[in-house]
Image (cartoon, rainbow, N blue to C red):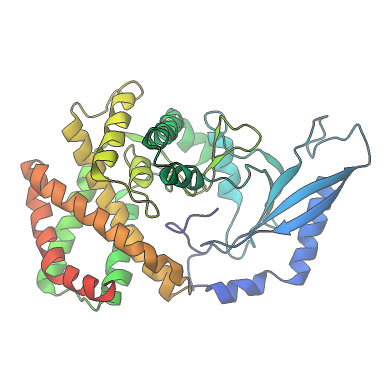
Length: 394
């Protein structure tokens, strides 16, 4: 329910581990949470079920409404309304993570896509009551189709997700900046994210930058950023993948979207990369190419500045993919080393493969300017980094 690939503490200073975060979820806080829930549903008996944790320091609970004392029951906003049988409650200790951005971005996206309706909130304490999409993730839907070897269903699902993404991208970016304080995915942010690769991933492999490779890295990341900043700009979800999309249990024709609180204004390719090169799902390159082409065809109806040719668009997708995958490799190691969440190590080989596919494609099909900065970096990764990677992840 929360983005491991952007996960951080609220103040982003001293690292907080999974164990130390548990100190904030005390019995006293649970009592406060219970009082908040009971106040949100004053006419109902409630049953609270705690849900498994994820990569953030938040906790989630499902609240079941089990009895109604008043047939004219009102919802938490005071309007007569038929409440759903269940709701999700977010518990985010304010010392760790603020829910302010979640509320703000939910309000931004709600007119365009199916994000959770907010029924009650206490931003100061870090409590939210949200619409409950259920427990069927997009990941479950595609896994079911995979087991049945139903390639048509898989394609239908991904086109559904891409159509929803394009709808999200119709949001006005100037309004998003002005009225909802959505920041730019600027050069400093892109660079800072890629530095996670050199700060966490390379040391984990036992690789150090020397004067030569440091220069290659600097030239590579600077040129990459310059190209990415030329892409058409949209509101970027930032983690638009199979675990953050849901089949809405009460409106099954609508795709529920969660974990959007880190939204920025950035490249129109970023969320597409998150979806088709998902760290948790593997597809053939021909399948990935077909979804990239589908997005490109549909995007021309939405974005006037969409790349003129498919090869130009694929180049943009792969440039953005490199940035994202360098970041994810660093974050997955950080989650393991700093936060004790070793399960993310199992996903690293898939992310590395995606990175190398993107690098090799651009080295072969990119324009001369792109090849000039890709080739030295690819050579370094293949000759010096990849052998150490294979030793660690044999």
